[in-house]
Length: 436
Ligand SMILES: Cc1cc2nc3c(=O)[nH]c(=O)nc-3n(C[C@H](O)[C@H](O)[C@H](O)COP(=O)(O)OP(=O)(O)OC[C@H]3O[C@@H](n4cnc5c(N)ncnc54)[C@H](O)[C@@H]3O)c2cc1C
Image 1 (cartoon, protein in one colour):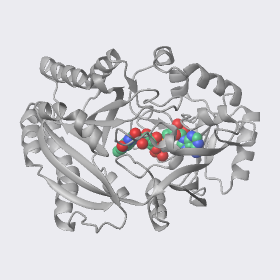
Image 2: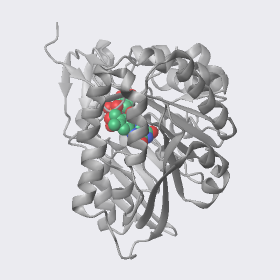
Image 3: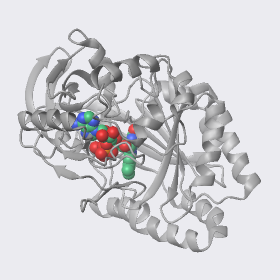
């Protein structure tokens, strides 16, 4: 039995790969993959291990791309630049390197520790009705295929590989470089405030239309929400970051240290959770700040949790939240984590959760010491009734049979996988479940 062990951030998945390899060059990686295919050994790249699903699990060779990191080319464009970056680059490092060049990623999720390739491979997204997920920012890719060749692809060169591999679930090959359409650096003016769910839903169309990046957190067992309105500003706007001391109090104490304590207490005394939620939602105050875009989008997450996130048509949001609320009331299940609601525009990425439709994202979380299954299954059943699509990197119970009808280009993706990985070198149990 292998002595190598791997587990993901949320400790929901573990693996015992035969080998863990950190190649120093694309040539070394390509030779390794070609040889593994000849031997019939599975190969899987892992990023930061931040997927809650078993997307990165392997019993074969686990590849870390830590040595394939950094920006390798910047080509100026009318509205920013095309930036080619190696696949193992962490988003946090990319953000800093881009800022130094007067550039930025157009949108980001709420953490920045992922690798670029890992983030795009599962459809990582942020919020903003006019913005797509990270995969929509890709303009070209280099991919090591199962036979050990390196393929370059773009919308005009090898387009089938491009369409599949820009959100490829690690199923087509190992991405080694990505060319991203980056925008001029910008600041964000963040406005956070509390309110009620009913008023937020009433104003939703307006907030989505007039705020670049709008999201809200609903506190279950209450009708209270925390709203976040982030507005894009020129990069030379005088920055007014969150003051260090109060920022530490809000982010570290309330979101991390204190939140850990609250969750431990809620685990021991679940009946107290509704009152804790009511109190937390009132303790959070209003705050405004202006900072570099990437510093506003992302924040540290030190409380371990499990997460499920469903993309649903925007029009279904009120019904889905209402159903979740009714389920919580009916069953008496106690939910301590706020439900996070974000938005994205429709896109054309084959396996994007926002494929062909403007989407609302409903994310539910559960503290890692508490049982998540009952809650997540209920939310999945409610979201499925609204034609929801689960985030590929977050927990769900779906299989190929019921995912196929949810994605108009599903069969094209499966055909591309047959073409580019006929030997199933990049296969794992997760891919067998979701792709068949
Ligand atoms: C605390 C937390 C917050 C999060 N916030 C958000 C959020 O705001 N928005 C959102 O959409 N998601 C979010 N996620 C989910 C996360 O962005 C995704 O799961 C993402 O895939 C993780 O990136 P990673 O680098 O850790 O990849 P991993 O989880 O390590 O891998 C993900 C997949 O990518 C594949 N892969 C990795 N590298 C390569 C490569 N070079 N070539 C081919 N395939 C590759 C892996 O094999 C695997 O299939 C969050 C997760 C956590 C734990």
